[in-house]
Length: 104
Ligand code: FES
Image (cartoon, rainbow, N blue to C red; front, side, top):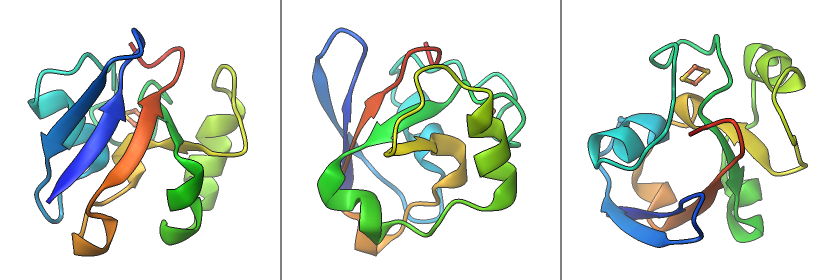
């Protein structure tokens, strides 16, 4: 299984993905620069990503905590999510996203 991440230079990376890992952990553990300052506790918004339109409806909805943190993030768009709050599973194989400003 995999996720596909576009970094801030526009370069695409196909990363092997493990079930039950957060998308932020998958990105970070494969050496793609992502700030993720709070380590995944939904307290910094520096793991902000833009989810590809084709995947938006396949993700569980953001909870109030995530929505609250995104309120304070830069350049928030309709497809903005926090990567630490997306837990990978087999239904997300091929998930495609782009790192947002403020996440690197
Ligand atoms: S790593 Fe801090 S909110 Fe995701």
